[in-house]
Length: 212
Image (cartoon, rainbow, N blue to C red):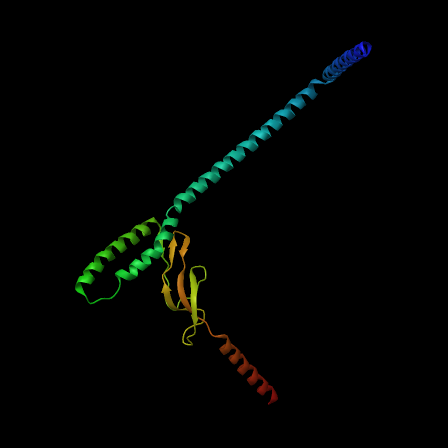
Protein backbone atom coordinates (compact mmCIF):
# COMPACT_ATOMS: atom_id res chain seq x y z
CA UNK A 1 0.00 0.00 0.00
CA UNK A 2 2.82 2.40 0.85
CA UNK A 3 4.46 1.68 -2.49
CA UNK A 4 1.20 2.46 -4.34
CA UNK A 5 0.84 5.79 -2.51
CA UNK A 6 4.42 6.70 -3.42
CA UNK A 7 3.70 5.87 -7.08
CA UNK A 8 0.54 8.08 -7.04
CA UNK A 9 2.47 10.99 -5.49
CA UNK A 10 5.30 10.57 -8.02
CA UNK A 11 2.73 10.46 -10.84
CA UNK A 12 0.99 13.62 -9.66
CA UNK A 13 4.32 15.45 -9.33
CA UNK A 14 5.29 14.39 -12.83
CA UNK A 15 1.91 15.62 -14.11
CA UNK A 16 2.46 18.97 -12.43
CA UNK A 17 5.93 19.25 -13.94
CA UNK A 18 4.52 18.45 -17.42
CA UNK A 19 1.82 21.14 -17.04
CA UNK A 20 4.40 23.72 -15.95
CA UNK A 21 6.64 22.81 -18.87
CA UNK A 22 3.69 23.06 -21.31
CA UNK A 23 2.74 26.46 -19.93
CA UNK A 24 6.31 27.71 -20.28
CA UNK A 25 6.44 26.37 -23.82
CA UNK A 26 3.19 28.12 -24.78
CA UNK A 27 4.40 31.39 -23.24
CA UNK A 28 7.63 31.08 -25.21
CA UNK A 29 5.69 30.49 -28.42
CA UNK A 30 3.48 33.56 -27.85
CA UNK A 31 6.58 35.63 -27.10
CA UNK A 32 8.20 34.38 -30.28
CA UNK A 33 5.09 35.24 -32.27
CA UNK A 34 5.06 38.72 -30.78
CA UNK A 35 8.74 39.13 -31.58
CA UNK A 36 8.12 37.97 -35.13
CA UNK A 37 5.27 40.52 -35.61
CA UNK A 38 6.17 43.63 -37.54
CA UNK A 39 5.52 47.08 -36.06
CA UNK A 40 3.00 47.72 -38.84
CA UNK A 41 1.03 44.63 -37.82
CA UNK A 42 1.01 45.68 -34.17
CA UNK A 43 -0.21 49.17 -35.13
CA UNK A 44 -2.94 47.64 -37.32
CA UNK A 45 -4.12 45.42 -34.43
CA UNK A 46 -4.18 48.37 -32.04
CA UNK A 47 -6.09 50.47 -34.56
CA UNK A 48 -8.59 47.67 -35.10
CA UNK A 49 -9.16 47.35 -31.34
CA UNK A 50 -9.57 51.13 -31.07
CA UNK A 51 -12.10 51.10 -33.89
CA UNK A 52 -14.10 48.36 -32.17
CA UNK A 53 -14.09 50.36 -28.94
CA UNK A 54 -15.21 53.49 -30.84
CA UNK A 55 -18.05 51.58 -32.50
CA UNK A 56 -19.22 50.23 -29.15
CA UNK A 57 -19.03 53.70 -27.62
CA UNK A 58 -21.00 55.36 -30.44
CA UNK A 59 -23.63 52.58 -30.40
CA UNK A 60 -24.07 53.02 -26.65
CA UNK A 61 -24.25 56.79 -27.10
CA UNK A 62 -26.91 56.46 -29.85
CA UNK A 63 -28.97 54.07 -27.71
CA UNK A 64 -28.78 56.49 -24.77
CA UNK A 65 -29.89 59.42 -26.97
CA UNK A 66 -32.79 57.40 -28.41
CA UNK A 67 -33.86 56.42 -24.90
CA UNK A 68 -33.77 60.09 -23.82
CA UNK A 69 -35.88 61.11 -26.85
CA UNK A 70 -38.45 58.39 -26.13
CA UNK A 71 -38.67 59.45 -22.50
CA UNK A 72 -39.07 63.11 -23.50
CA UNK A 73 -41.83 62.25 -26.00
CA UNK A 74 -43.61 60.08 -23.42
CA UNK A 75 -43.47 62.89 -20.86
CA UNK A 76 -44.82 65.41 -23.40
CA UNK A 77 -47.66 63.03 -24.31
CA UNK A 78 -48.52 62.44 -20.65
CA UNK A 79 -48.60 66.19 -19.96
CA UNK A 80 -50.65 66.88 -23.08
CA UNK A 81 -53.35 64.32 -22.22
CA UNK A 82 -53.09 64.58 -18.43
CA UNK A 83 -56.75 65.60 -18.08
CA UNK A 84 -58.14 63.05 -20.57
CA UNK A 85 -59.00 60.39 -18.00
CA UNK A 86 -60.63 62.89 -15.63
CA UNK A 87 -62.71 64.46 -18.42
CA UNK A 88 -63.84 61.01 -19.57
CA UNK A 89 -65.03 60.12 -16.05
CA UNK A 90 -66.81 63.46 -15.53
CA UNK A 91 -68.67 63.74 -18.85
CA UNK A 92 -71.48 61.25 -18.13
CA UNK A 93 -72.26 62.91 -14.79
CA UNK A 94 -72.05 66.40 -16.30
CA UNK A 95 -74.45 65.49 -19.11
CA UNK A 96 -77.05 64.24 -16.61
CA UNK A 97 -76.48 67.36 -14.49
CA UNK A 98 -76.84 69.52 -17.61
CA UNK A 99 -80.16 67.89 -18.53
CA UNK A 100 -81.45 68.46 -14.98
CA UNK A 101 -80.54 72.18 -14.82
CA UNK A 102 -82.02 72.80 -18.29
CA UNK A 103 -85.37 71.22 -17.54
CA UNK A 104 -88.45 73.35 -18.35
CA UNK A 105 -90.52 74.60 -15.43
CA UNK A 106 -93.03 77.37 -14.72
CA UNK A 107 -92.19 77.58 -11.02
CA UNK A 108 -90.21 80.84 -10.43
CA UNK A 109 -88.51 79.54 -7.28
CA UNK A 110 -87.38 76.37 -9.07
CA UNK A 111 -86.18 78.47 -12.02
CA UNK A 112 -83.92 80.52 -9.72
CA UNK A 113 -82.75 77.34 -8.02
CA UNK A 114 -81.88 75.73 -11.37
CA UNK A 115 -80.25 78.95 -12.63
CA UNK A 116 -77.71 78.80 -9.81
CA UNK A 117 -76.86 75.20 -10.64
CA UNK A 118 -76.64 76.05 -14.35
CA UNK A 119 -73.91 78.57 -13.52
CA UNK A 120 -71.99 75.82 -11.69
CA UNK A 121 -72.48 73.50 -14.68
CA UNK A 122 -71.12 76.17 -17.04
CA UNK A 123 -68.10 76.81 -14.79
CA UNK A 124 -67.15 73.11 -14.73
CA UNK A 125 -67.58 72.80 -18.51
CA UNK A 126 -65.50 75.95 -19.14
CA UNK A 127 -62.75 74.62 -16.86
CA UNK A 128 -62.64 71.41 -18.89
CA UNK A 129 -62.59 73.41 -22.13
CA UNK A 130 -59.55 75.31 -20.89
CA UNK A 131 -57.82 71.94 -20.39
CA UNK A 132 -58.59 70.88 -23.98
CA UNK A 133 -62.22 69.70 -24.09
CA UNK A 134 -64.29 70.68 -27.12
CA UNK A 135 -67.78 69.81 -28.37
CA UNK A 136 -67.95 68.00 -31.73
CA UNK A 137 -70.04 70.23 -33.97
CA UNK A 138 -72.75 67.98 -35.42
CA UNK A 139 -75.85 69.19 -37.27
CA UNK A 140 -78.85 67.51 -38.84
CA UNK A 141 -78.15 66.99 -42.54
CA UNK A 142 -74.37 66.55 -42.08
CA UNK A 143 -72.65 63.58 -43.66
CA UNK A 144 -72.21 60.72 -41.18
CA UNK A 145 -68.60 60.49 -39.94
CA UNK A 146 -67.88 57.11 -38.26
CA UNK A 147 -64.60 58.44 -36.80
CA UNK A 148 -66.46 60.98 -34.63
CA UNK A 149 -70.06 59.77 -34.61
CA UNK A 150 -71.85 56.64 -33.45
CA UNK A 151 -75.07 55.53 -35.18
CA UNK A 152 -77.58 54.74 -32.43
CA UNK A 153 -80.39 54.01 -34.89
CA UNK A 154 -81.33 54.07 -38.58
CA UNK A 155 -84.35 55.73 -40.12
CA UNK A 156 -85.32 56.68 -43.64
CA UNK A 157 -86.43 60.06 -44.92
CA UNK A 158 -86.68 60.18 -48.74
CA UNK A 159 -86.40 63.96 -48.65
CA UNK A 160 -82.91 63.74 -47.12
CA UNK A 161 -79.71 62.37 -48.63
CA UNK A 162 -78.79 58.84 -47.66
CA UNK A 163 -76.07 58.37 -45.00
CA UNK A 164 -76.75 61.80 -43.49
CA UNK A 165 -77.71 62.67 -39.91
CA UNK A 166 -81.44 62.86 -39.16
CA UNK A 167 -81.19 63.44 -35.41
CA UNK A 168 -78.51 64.22 -32.79
CA UNK A 169 -79.26 62.08 -29.71
CA UNK A 170 -76.25 63.00 -27.56
CA UNK A 171 -73.37 65.45 -27.92
CA UNK A 172 -69.87 64.22 -28.69
CA UNK A 173 -66.60 65.55 -27.30
CA UNK A 174 -62.93 65.77 -28.27
CA UNK A 175 -60.01 66.16 -25.87
CA UNK A 176 -57.44 68.11 -27.87
CA UNK A 177 -56.89 65.87 -30.92
CA UNK A 178 -58.27 62.69 -29.30
CA UNK A 179 -61.84 61.45 -29.44
CA UNK A 180 -63.33 61.49 -25.94
CA UNK A 181 -66.95 60.55 -26.69
CA UNK A 182 -68.53 60.12 -30.13
CA UNK A 183 -71.70 62.00 -31.01
CA UNK A 184 -74.68 59.64 -30.85
CA UNK A 185 -76.87 60.10 -33.91
CA UNK A 186 -79.67 58.64 -36.02
CA UNK A 187 -78.69 58.29 -39.68
CA UNK A 188 -80.69 58.20 -42.88
CA UNK A 189 -80.49 54.72 -44.39
CA UNK A 190 -82.88 53.27 -46.95
CA UNK A 191 -84.32 49.91 -45.81
CA UNK A 192 -83.09 46.85 -47.68
CA UNK A 193 -86.57 45.73 -48.81
CA UNK A 194 -87.19 49.07 -50.51
CA UNK A 195 -83.83 48.81 -52.25
CA UNK A 196 -84.69 45.32 -53.45
CA UNK A 197 -88.12 46.48 -54.68
CA UNK A 198 -86.50 49.30 -56.60
CA UNK A 199 -83.99 46.89 -58.18
CA UNK A 200 -86.82 44.50 -59.14
CA UNK A 201 -88.78 47.33 -60.78
CA UNK A 202 -85.70 48.35 -62.77
CA UNK A 203 -85.14 44.73 -63.89
CA UNK A 204 -88.80 44.32 -64.92
CA UNK A 205 -88.78 47.51 -66.98
CA UNK A 206 -85.55 46.41 -68.64
CA UNK A 207 -87.05 43.02 -69.50
CA UNK A 208 -90.21 44.63 -70.90
CA UNK A 209 -88.06 46.89 -73.02
CA UNK A 210 -86.23 43.87 -74.41
CA UNK A 211 -89.48 42.04 -75.27
CA UNK A 212 -90.80 45.03 -77.13
